Image (cartoon, rainbow, N blue to C red):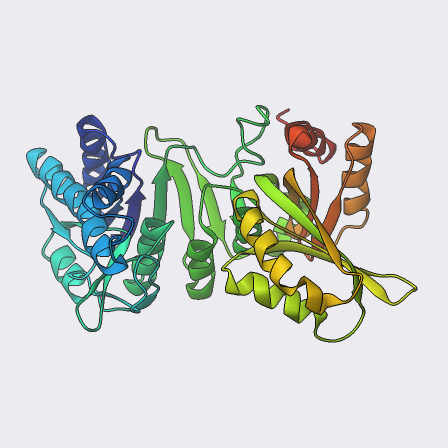
Length: 409
């Protein structure tokens, strides 16, 4: 008998018919001789509607507090767990629903984006031992003081992986609306292939580079606790993508995938002195405004003046410009800055890049042959990323995908 954790996202439980489909799949898994914990998200659209209601009953002068937002949003998953348990019981199964708190998920006190501090799955084990299928609310937990908290974006994935680690599950399956992780977004590169096996590190880099299949913190948690998981489609029985610790043979694939991230902006601060503290002053101001910086490139000229460029989300560009104006006078008498929206990031990822030379050159050559200009370059051990004009990102993804032999045969 295997112990399996399955997670179903909002689209997988988006309608009563889809909930019944999930119920059948979960029950079949148990009937095959397994113990099953199914983690479910709120039905698609429910969380947005709850937020809309929160703002309709509040006002700009008195917006809803994060504490009450958490209490409200947690009801979305509670609705789904009850409906899913009902659907399984209607099929002759034996299911019970548990909230995050009932399942022993303890979080820190940060509302709307809490972190899991500990899991004591006593009731989960008791229900499984009694022959129940456990339907667990994703995205939520409870503080030591009994306050309801939610885990933020990707919270249900995190719930599933963390619970799989806590109960020492044999397998964790993340069911979604795609067949697995692809070498690139199939909507951008129609010939993209599904990846059968990918390492934690590759999955982390792809998640941080724009791949929307998994949030990076869920993958980080899986890597830290050695939780192997599979990304699969809840609408069919096709094999998915297994995410696991890397093995020596996996390095034979030079580039595992290509990721794109749109809606980026670039800021360049020109002519700042080359002395200690300048970068700290710039990025300290940016950090205080809660702006996430991605790529950073610094160039020191022979005249001992520095140009610093960085990228951020295009949505954060006005805020970043406002913060830089406040500190510009402290950055030197000649300091100025320029900004540019309408750029996108293209990344290639693969642990095989560690042991193969010429990878970046092949990427740059493919872009050059297509007449696509590179604006910034950033590299790590298993990733090379560039920025290009957003209008060219789809063409860039296609030519790079082809250059590394990732197209379907």
